Structures are given as C-alpha cells and as structure tokens.
Image (cartoon, rainbow, N blue to C red; front, side):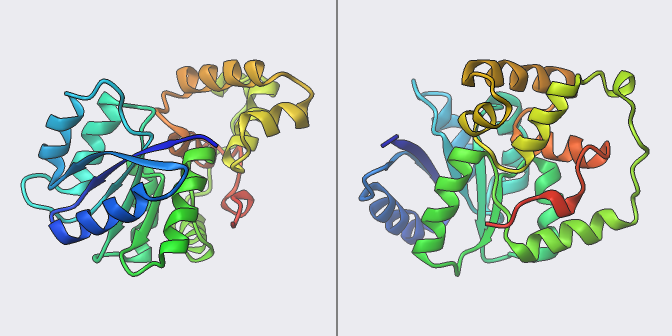
Amino acid sequence: MKNIKLGIIDDDALIVNLLNNFLDSQDDLSVLLTASNGRDCLEKMALLDTIPDVLLMDLKMDEMNGIDTTEHLRQLYPELKIIIITSHYKVSFTGFMLKTGVSAFAPKGISTTELLMIIREVDQRGYYFDQAQLEVIREQLSSKFPKPVLEDENNLSEREQEVLILLCQQKTAQEIGDKLFITKRTVEGHKNNLFIKTGAKNIAGLVIYALQNGIIVADDLPII
C-alpha cells in the first residue's frame, strides 16, 4: 500500500501532537512535517528533500493564516494537496476554499474515521466534498450561468474534455484509462496538457475551470 506523506500545520501544540501520533500510527500514512503556522511551514518545507503529499492545516493561525499559506504553497508546490481543518468552519466558505485551491475543507470536530477517509480520498483523487458542501457550491454557482464554450474557444480536444470530466468526478488515472480504453500513461499526458491549457495548478483548479466554462455542472460532482 502506498505510503501517504503528511504535513500538519496548527498553532495548537496539543492538536499537532495528537494528530502526529495518531496519523503516524496508520500503516499507509507517515508524518514528514509539523509546523505551528504558515510561515513556519514554508520555512520547513524549503528544507525538505521530499515534500508531503497532503497537508492538514488550520485556518486561523498567528504569523500566517491558512488562506495566505495556501496561496503561497500553490505557487511553490502546485502538486501539493491541502486539507483545511478548522474550528472556524462554515459550510458557506466551501466555494471560496475550492477557488483558493484547497482540496478538502472540514471542521475540527470530525471523527478520526472520517479524517482518514478524507485524507485517502484527497491523496488518490485530488479533492473531497461532502453533500452539504456540494449543495453550497451549487447555490453559489446558480446565479452565474456560464457562457457555452466552443472547442476552439477553450482549446481543449474532445478527448481532453472527456478526461477533464472524469477527473472532476474523482476518477483515478487508471480508472479513466479503463473507461476510455487508453493507457494510464496516456491519461497522465492528457492531464498534463489540461494543466498547461487551463492554467490550473491542481485538480481543484481543473474543477473550477470546468465549472466556470460549462464543461460540467455542480450536480455532476460526486458525493462520497
């Protein structure tokens, strides 16, 4: 089983220690980094030979909050997946978090079972939203009907659009390859082209692009 490398950023030392001990005890998880705020995280990340796959980060922190830290991390480490876990959780923030590049958004009161599920879904598929969050995304987009985009306007081939839709539906490269009868390597090539053509930095960015350009609608986003 793949070893998912994690980072934990929170200004509550007790929470950091508890999460560190719990997550590091899982067979498929290892904690590479702990930090007390965004600035501390950026400084420590710069010293690592291998960066984490997934960061668990608080929203409100001294020195640099979770939103500002996410913006910096997206520029420096576009493949990094970020899960915001906060006591300041409001489901109405979901759309903003998605736009910012956050892969998942959760309250600190979630169970350990749910936390593990979210980490694994984000690592494998790029993002995670529950039913309530998807409802918010639908409502926030309902007043912004996108202009239909023709192929020559978005410069995506029919195959690239097919891959984009499946990525937004949380399909893995292997699952997409099986569905479209192409190799996993070919899927990865299409995905790289999508990042280049859309300017997206991660899967969450591709979701935003697809929603804004009418390639998918919010109802097409899956509920786990």
